Image (cartoon, rainbow, N blue to C red; front, side, top):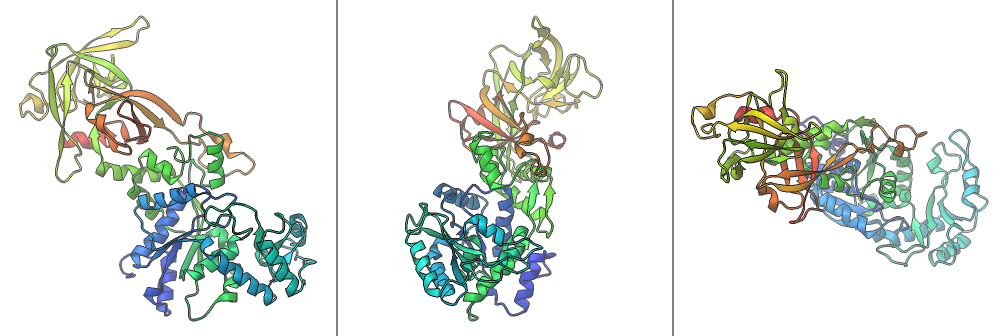
Length: 561
């Protein structure tokens, strides 16, 4: 990577320094190491973009390694979902690896630790161990089992592996220093007994390695050059290096752990444990609920993968944790969809409009452009008839001068169609408008080239022909939490901030070209926002999710017209 191409972040500066100090380019190797105990969320997306982005920039391989060391919480479903999410984001991994691939090697190393007096079997209860571990300001005290003989430790470890003891009776601890200033160095646990079926190794193992023991050694076995993780692992770096010291062969690449800050997203949570709570307690419909911060939820909502990658690049990598406003993510989504989606017409709050001077039973198929951002313009046909649906908010019986839509006695253009003039209304017994009657200028059809078609009017509104309208369920999403940082106050349960109005389901009407739309197809409903087809949709019942609203984009569309 040329340092002249762009300003380097601190992670890239670390890599460049290592290359200057003699690390060969072909020795660079990165990894993304998810634990398969839940679905990936927007925070993981940043880590994915970091590691795979480095792989692209440095033309180096990136491994996908599953940290599957806790079978009690891990499932194949999560493995499959993680792989699907990474591929959807547009990345490819060099090798698909699992910590469980190394269980035998990790165990063999643990046996060597015991033989060298660097590990021992402790038989205290967890409460006893917690007491003797000390505090950040008070040193710990040695376990009464710390000086067991090598023979006894080997015997107990073997029997632990063979499943002779129940959960919680013994653990294997590294023998480091119970008076160390870093509490993680006070004889950390390497193995615990866990009689639980593993999704890959079945019932072969009754003991499982702890994260700190498995992670760095897995990096070493895969010859990862740089192991990037979030800031909470900074205190773990010393232990990461100590474990490596015991097995390192200086003819091989020694992995280097470095840390970056989490980027939390406003109005959501990015804890897998809390996301699981939302799912299990049915505050949402599942991991892929479009209100969730999961990658699968964002995909289902209609967020394009490139928007998420652009968002990750925009917020960058930092050394300090901060809260990113979700509006920045929405901006990236809107910017991407503006370039790629077809503009179509849909009416979500319909009121009937009758063009009184339009011939009864007549219909026209008018030409409509698909996307004004396209380099080569494409078009589709939309049906027009005497009776239309328009948005209820696009009409006011009496309006001030700042209202540029339809009123009685004023003119607007129907998008891609004719100029109409409001004439009268019909109301029900409660005074609600049920029909708007208007007339149209027969010579004003868009694109016809007539003088009337080029006449300027105050506003343009969208519409759908009633005779051709296709009903659709439309799901309107708001932010899942009403508070920008629902997880910020540890004294208050984050679920207290759940927004009761985060989902509104309505019936709208869409133009017939959408009848054949498929799952995840994306559209701009003109003047309403961006929408995508939900997986619940069928030929018999269309279902759309609102992805994100529009900013002031309609003015640009009108200007081009």
